Image (cartoon, rainbow, N blue to C red; front, side, top):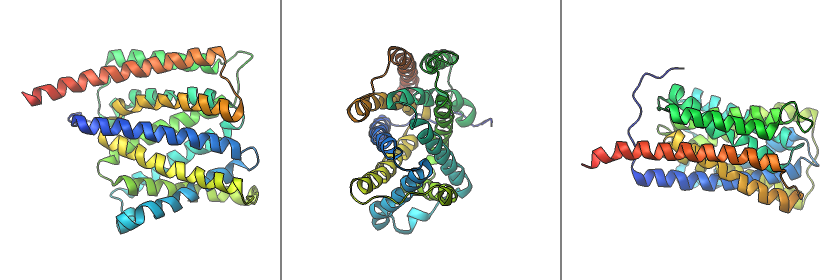
Length: 306
């Protein structure tokens, strides 16, 4: 889909900083969410965990935002786009949780680091935001890093990594939709729609695989899963409504830190050498892209100050 409109004007510096802080907090929530989901899927079907993740998140949205937002929590300017956005997020969660059952947290997180690269690659066509030759090269280098992590054709290749790749692509498209329509939608209403769509989309799978949750610690985990999802996606929506996608997206790579720490503490998993090498290549590409975007927006802002 080609966008002929000119690139959006550079946002104020305070909005960019707010977006960066929001994405960092969002990524922290998602790291905890993934650790909880991997724990739950050891005892419960993936479809049930995905459904609970959205249903509980919807409940948290009502508790946290309904008193303040009222009916605005259920008002959207573009319902069709919001539904597509919600389905992309559901697909990303469903695929990621299935892959995560069979993979270490840090390995899955390393593959998902390509999401910012996909966002950057598609932002020119989808959002009308220029990318440039240097950033294209950085994107290609980042994808090479992903191949180092996945290692297709090697004895260590895990077919479930392809589920993480598909999830990452869905996540990137979700982020692009968040950016494209974020400035015309309330962040709380957008996050609420995502929980509604996810709950409805996951429900048809439940009759075929259901395990009644055990009261106690499992119930706490289910509630924590929804809480992290609701808060994380609320701040993700804020981030993409405050700054261009190519600026915000590279900060997603900080999830590797949380995944490595939680993977070691909770599951006693330590990423192998090549996973770290591939992740380092991807992160370096993301850092370079972020640096180039910072230079570009400084160049746009400075003439306005003269």
